[in-house]
Every structure is written in structure tokens, then in C-alpha cells.
Length: 323
Image (cartoon, rainbow, N blue to C red; front, side, top):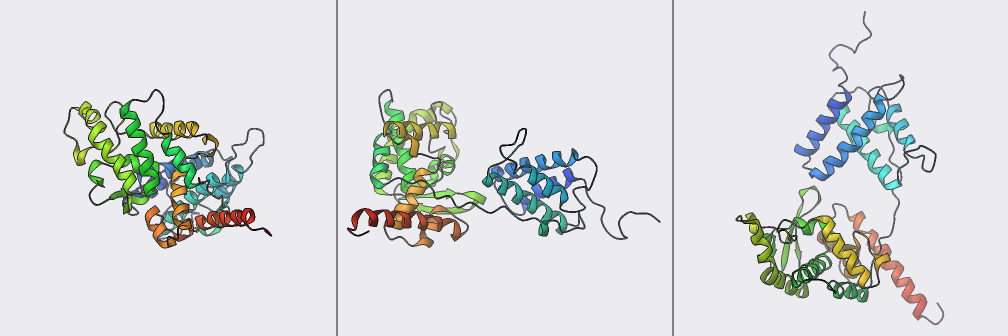
């Protein structure tokens, strides 16, 4: 009589193969972006490495111990030799592992429902940093400065105007092709997280700067490629005629922030956060803001209501004589 699995049950798959199957599932069945799949793959391969290093004991497929021990080791921040993670990173790592275990159990690769025994660390609700309307105007006006060429001035201003006018993530703005922008229709077609598509309005001021960029500066950079572009080519081009890099785009934001005296106020999503906050302060419906931002869940958008509430209380405290 053997101690193997019961008759008819699948033998536990090797961890690396199960991870590969899960990543294929995320790509083919769930349609997640390659950036998300890459991040999950990195997290799960790190977990697999930790499992291989475990000195005997229970394997990854027998219970939650391997996962809980691994995650516990990542919480030891500040200890000598520890690989502690920030709470947001730890939550993402735990979510990746729990999703993997849920898939493995559903596919019959393991016989224990490990996912049901794994709790996610609590999500810290950090209020996003936002700028006032006046500060945004200072930032936009500071997009051009000494040493800039007419081409870089137009590109920087058009990019920042679009990010604020439509609340795009920087990665979304840089993925845009020329055909995604309708100057006549005053909208941009955006492919966001999870390949979800949305149409976002573009205001008149941003349209004017985008029109100047497209007519006056972009053609010379586009010609550097010496090939016929597909979909009109990238909307924003770098100095060598290729699609503008994320690092270059953030250099634009940072330089403008320094010129405007806002360097310590700028984060990767500052213009996007300000876009959402200013819409809500102006009376926009929360569901409309959710659609414009491309949030899958309304709870993500609701974070901005806390920001506007804080501002209302601050204005009240300054303005009311008996506050």
C-alpha cells in the first residue's frame, strides 16, 4: 500500500509549472496587461525561490504554512538582513500568491484550499497629494524655460495639458497614437489597465496646445523614423523620433515642478489626482469621474471624496469667524 494520492486525484504539480499555468491563465483568460503579468510573475518566482530554500518541512502544496511563513518574513522591516516590504507592496505580493493558490486549487493542481486561509494585509488609505487650480496653472506655465527648444516647449506643454485635461496616467498618455486623438471631436480614446477602453473628453485649452504640437513640431520628429507609421504613429515622440519614454515624460513633470516652486508636491499621479479632485469640487458626479479615470471599482474613486472633504473643512476653518 502506498502513501501517494488517492485514486483519481491529480498529483501536485511542480510549483514552477503551476506558476507558468497561472500566468498563462491571466494572459489568455483574464486578459490582463503584460505589465501586470510581469509583476505577478516576479512576485511568484520570488515566492518559489523562498519555497525551494525552506529546510524540509511542509511543501507549498500541502497547506498555507509556506505562504504565511514567506509573507511573515517580508514584514520584518528595519531588522538586520530582513527584506521587509512597504504595506502596499506586501499587499500586492499577498494578493498574487492568494490568486495563484485559488487557481491551483480550482485546476486540481493541489488538494488543499490554501487561498481561503490567506488574509490580505489591510490596505492603507493614503490620501493622494493634489494641487490647487492656481498651482496647476503655475505648473503648466512653467513647462517651458531657458534652454528649451521650440519643439521641447510645445511637447512639454501639450503633454502636461493633456494629462491634466483628461486625467490620464502617464503610461496611458505615452501609449497614445495619433489616431487615438480626435481634435474635431475633442476626445481621446484611451486603453487603460486590463486593456479597458474609454473615451475621455479633452478641453479646449489642451486641444489648442495639442494642435500646435501636431502641426508645428511633431512632423519633423516623425520623419526621423523614415518609415510609414501605423495608426498615425505615436502621439508623443522623443528626440530621436521614437515613442516618448516614461523617464523622459517624468523629467518634463519634475523640471516644470522645480520651475514652479512645487518640487516637493509632485508625485507620479499629481495631475491625475488634481483632475479628479477639481471635477468633484466642481460638482461632477462620482460615477462620471470613475468612468473618466478608468477605475474598475467605485471604491477607488471614492478616495477623492475624502480629499475634497478635507479641503472643505480647511476652507471652513479659515473663513468662518467661529470655526
